Image (cartoon, rainbow, N blue to C red; front, top):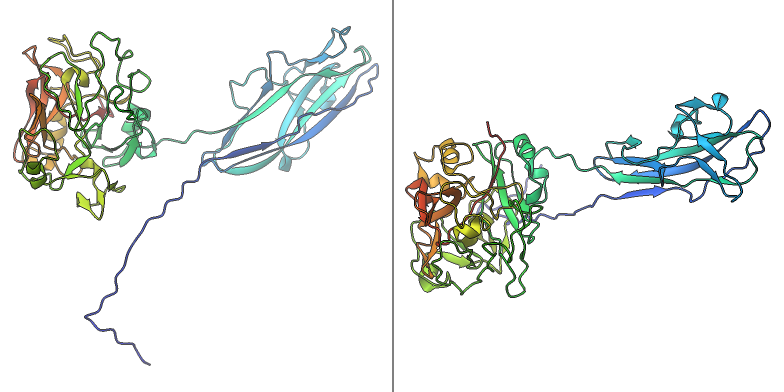
Length: 475
C-alpha cells in the first residue's frame, strides 16, 4: 500500500465565504368566485348542499390563520326579486342535515381528509376571530360546504349573500431580540425573554441604519454602538424631519414647530461653534472608526477626523468599506471590512439628545429622547438603567478597559465644544437623561482607557455621543 508524501514546507491555502439567501414568507389561496346550487322545495322542506374546494398553502414558519365571514353584519340569504322581502336566515348553533329547520342555511368547513360535512353553523358576521389557525408551513385542502333547507313557504327566486375568506400569515414568534428586525420592535418583554449575550444587528426604521444591540449582564438590552441619527433635512440625506411616538422615545411629535425646534444635523466638515445650553444642535463627523480603540492616542482641537493628527492616532474613514456582519472578529479593520461597534456616530447637545425636552429642566430628568421607540437614554443614579449599574455588573472598576472591549464596546471618542472636536480617541462622554445641579450642565458618563466616572457632567451646549438601552428587568 502506497501513501503519497506531502512536503511539510508546502501548505494549501483555504478561503471561506458565506452566501445568504433570504426566502420571504408567502401564502396562496384558491377558491371559486361563485358557489351556487338549485333546490326544489316541498311543503315539509327539502335540504340541499353544494361543496367547493378551498386550497391554502404557505411556507410561513408559524403557519396561517383563516378568517371567514359575510362582508356585512347580516348573514341571511336575501331574495334578489325586488318584490321579495323574505330571507333565508342562518341556522342556530350547530346542526346536522337531519335537524335543519325550514328556510335556514349554514356552512361547514373541514379538511378533505376528514370526509364529508356533518354539522353546519351560521356564517360569522365579523372577522375578529380566526376560524382556524395552523402553526407550521402547510399545504391544506378543505371542503367548504353550504347547506340550506327550504319549504314552499319561501317564494321562488334567487337568494344570495357574499362571504369573504381571507388567510393571513401568522406573525413570527419572538423569543429573543435576535428574532427582531427593527429597533422599534423592542419591548421590555422581548428583552426579558432574551438570554445574556444574545446579540444582533437591528434596523432603525427612521433612516434604515443598522445598530449592534445585545442583552447584557445588568438584565437590560443595550445598543453596543453609538447612535448615528441625522436630524432634520440636510443635503438630501436620508434622515428624519419629525420624531413621533410611533418611531422614537418621545411623548409627542418633535419638529421645527416645537418650543425648542429640531435643528438640522451639521454634516462632515461643518462643526460650528454653538454655545447655547438650550440649543438642539448635532453633528455628523463622518464614518470613522479608531483602529485600536483601547490605545490612549488621540487627536485634539481639530475640525475634522480627516485631520492628519487624527490619521496618525489611528482614525480611519470606513465609508468605502463594508461592515462585519458577525460578532466574532477580534479585529476592528480587516480586509476592507470594519467593526461597526466602533463607528463614531453623531454628537448631540443635551437638548437635542433629549428631543427638545431638556431646554429648561432644572431638577427632573428629561422626559423624552431621540432614541428609537422602546429605547431610552440611561439614567444617572445607582439603579438599573444607569451606567453605574451596568458597569458594576462587569466589575469594570477592577479593569476599566473592559468598557471598550466586547461585549460593551463603549468608545472614547471625545466631545465637540467651542467649534472643535477634542480628545478624540482618549476620552469618551455619553449623555444621560438626568440633570445636574447646575442648570447649564447635565449628567453624563466620563470614560477613558484607564479610568471612568459613571456620574460626571458636561455643559449642555457640548456635543456628546449617545448609547440607548431597553429595559428587560426593572425589579
